[in-house]
Image (tube, rainbow, N blue to C red; front, side, top):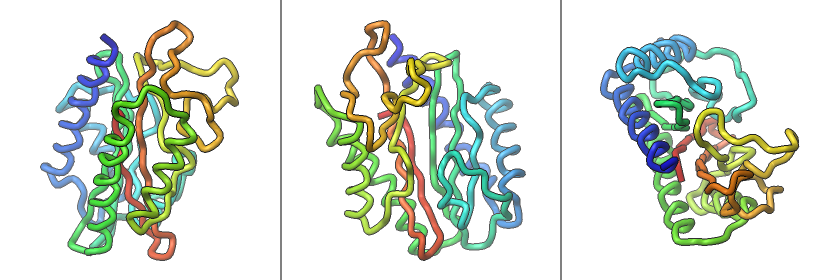
Amino acid sequence: MVSEKLRYAQDISIQFFQAIEERSLIVPGKTEEQLNAEVCCLAELGFGISRHWHKKIVRSGENTLAIYPDNPPNRVIEEDDIVFVDLGPIVDGYEADIGRTYVVGNNPRKLKLKNDVEKAWYEIQRWYGGRESLSASALFHYAAGKAKEFGWEFGGAIAGHIVGKYPHEQPADPKSLELDVHPDNHHDMFLPDANGDSRHWILELQFVDPGDKIGGYFEQLL
């Protein structure tokens, strides 16, 4: 089943992300581009992941305020920094989409942000679970409200999107938002795709503090 293959792709990708931390790849003095290259090398040599279905993102410091379409200047990771990694590994032909936040040092504000965005993700997952109908816009607004509940701002333009067998379903109208968790997408997330099959959604959260110029990110299969 597609769901089982997507879960497998996610499980392998999560193991890969855990290895990033275990191997202490995220250290001060390294540029985002350098870390990105090292992370992708680890993915291929350690986990057989050679393809990614979306651009590979490593952002640190004030660059963690940037949203997906942005391309901020390459930055050097500093002491006491915050970093997030967002990758779309393809495992056995199926897509994962994983985002994690890492803190270099012991800054309590940054550690709180890292922990809050992850905790909020699982709270939203539980809220979503068991439903049989829900508009994408309703999920977006719930996620944005959750950011405020934790004392942050919601930084993303969307709060998720679909994944599937690579390449995943595309909307008939390229400008359509129906496959994104967007505030203007009022379609039911539980509607089947064009082939009558169930859709599978990613929930992505980006919580930010523009004043402190920091952002935290957590993303995986809903």
